[in-house]
Length: 135
Image 1: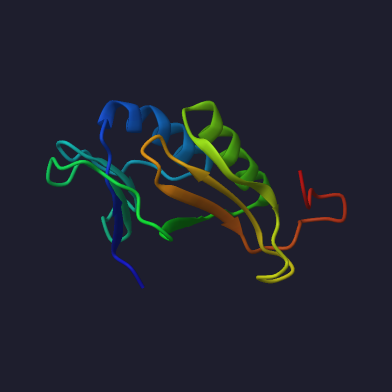
Image 2: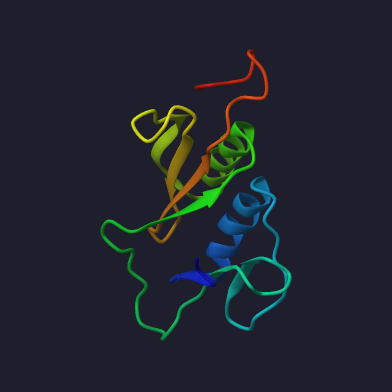
């Protein structure tokens, strides 16, 4: 549905230190370099997540706005959350089931160093009966 999503940053070096390990936890790479920006997503540029100081004005997070990244496994959600907290992010909702969305909805929420709210979500059932369902 979307081609790309962009969030602003007031400190691109700080954003790089946060986003590179967080995106790696979800197996999302940086397909190419863009001067003055961080780019993550598909190698063909068809689906991208971009971080940059768009017009040099202060970057502000949107009220009620967040970006949700698809995670292949619940373990990837946990890794996303741990990487975010270890690299300057803050907790906005720990990993766990959110059955009010659907019975397999496993997600974690964080804020990046600029206050942008991010989520990783796995919609899949655990691979086996001993798989983690909550932290």
